[in-house]
Image 1 (cartoon, one colour):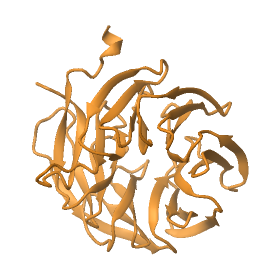
Image 2: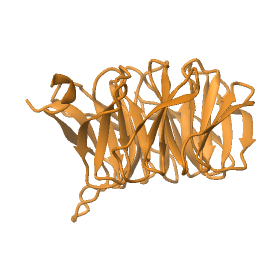
Image 3: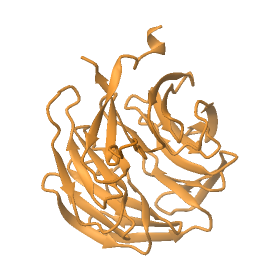
Image 4: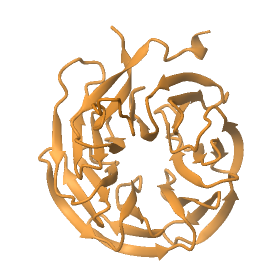
Length: 313
């Protein structure tokens, strides 16, 4: 029964630093630092010891004048982090000094940001369903495209030659990159597709939907191979672990589900007290960062996020 209970003895730790709800958590490329973005208009960078019990140091990234809705790390540089905010700016920060090294003002309130896997471009999505591609060296827009449908989340494949959009129509739009020419429209779900994750081994991508299902797609064939059915509410956030063996998904259910990718079976559930906004596995270890609308009756959980996967010892 070893396979069935791989996470049984592990627990979560709380990380408190933000003054308001944490919207986004993301690990750097070597798994040593975690970025968190919050409604309190700041991002923070935390040094995480995967096995140590030392006090966690954190650094505040200040400058945005609205909520930091999403952040992502440079896939080739463990100390560069990019933030997208409702203040219309995208900022690049040095996580060693906490200084903003680049910023650009775009046309709308930014809600999504993701790096191309080779670190050369950043894609940003805003509330008006507009996509902007930034060139990292000049930190200037090189493509802009407004879509006629609701765009929810964006991702590149590992090779960087395909670009995915999840839409409010229940479809996944697959574009060639860099031309952004439409290649496929996948009828993925019966309700809006909210989130997307790419398997680190490049075999699959997964889509979370308002129909409470997570679908798993073979990236070569563009075919759905299975669905994960454990959640009962719209799926807001999903993430593959570093080996591609497990997928975590979260919603307004009071659990985060961890399922085996190949069997489709749920292997563990992490209890949580509220709807989740962001889950992300560490790129080297089985540590899962998660953040949501957590509040207890004293409001004490307002700016907390958690990391699951520590030994109880």
